[in-house]
Image (cartoon, rainbow, N blue to C red; front, side, top):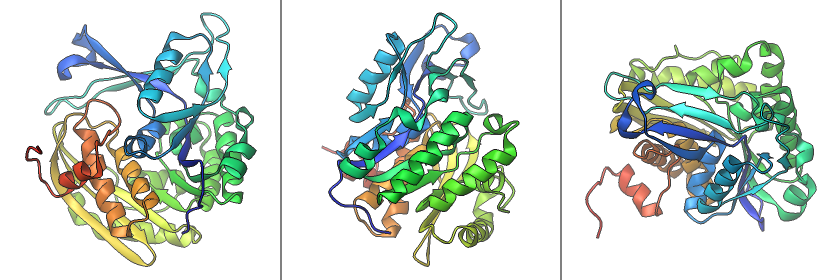
Length: 357
C-alpha cells in the first residue's frame, strides 16, 4: 500500500455537515433547558485527528445559502483546521433545505445516551459528484487518502452515486481509499439490495476497510460473531474469522480493522481493536476506559489509524494510535477528538494520566 506523494491534501472526505445539540451536565434532553451546539459529522470527526496534528484536510459538502447555521459550521471547520469545498444551495423557503440537527445527551451510569436525528430537508442528501472539481482535486492538487463512510454513502440515491463516482475517480488518480462501513438500518430501509451492491463496489475499491461485527454482516453480508458486544474479549477468534472471510471477498484491500467495544455503563466501556495488514494480525485486547461521552469514539479510532498510516509508521502503531485517539474522543464532549500533540495520544495509550508540566 503506497501513498501518493506531493499532494495538496493528506486526507479528504465527503460529508453532510450538521450540528449536535447536547444538554449541559449530562442531563437527558427532555428535562433540560440549557444546551450546547457543535458542528459535526461522522466523516469530519475522522478528519479532526489529522487536522489537529497539522496535516492538510478537506471536506467535500454542500451548504445552505445565507444560513446562520451554515456560517456557524464553516467557522467551526476553519477553527478546526479543516478545509471545505462545495456549493451554497438556496434554501427554497421556510420548508426548504437546512442542515441536520443531531439532538443527543451523553447518558449517565445505567441511563444510556439517547440520540435523535432530525434530518428533514437535509441539504447534504442532495450532494452530487458534479458539485466538485474532481480533476483539480484528485488529478492536479492530489489527495493521499480519501475517506468514505457508510453514513454518507447510504444517505440517499444521490449521495450513493456521488460516493461511487468520487471513489472511482480518486482511485484512478492514485489516491488510497478508506471505507468505514458504518451501517445504519434506518438509512438502508427499502434500499437493501441496491445498497448492498453499491457498498460491495466501494469496498472492492478500498485499500483500508473498517467495520464492527454488525457492519460487516449487514452491509457486506459476511458472517461474523453475534452483534451486541457482550463477552467481547472471548470472541477474538470469531472477529478474526470474520475478517478472514472479508479478506477472501476483497483480496485487493490491504488493511482491515474493527473496533471491540463492550458497554459496562454509560461511563465505563471495555475498548479494544483488531487490525490485519500484510499477513500479520495486531490485537489490542479490550481494557476498561472511563467515558465522558461515547459519541465519536469509533470515528476517533479511524481518524487515529489513518493519521498513523499517513505518518508512515509501522502497522502495529496504526492500531495503538487509533485505540488511543478513540479513547481521547470519549473523554471530550465534542463528537471528535482534538489531540494537542502525538505525545498526548501516546500517554493515553500507555495509561499515563499524570500532569504534564
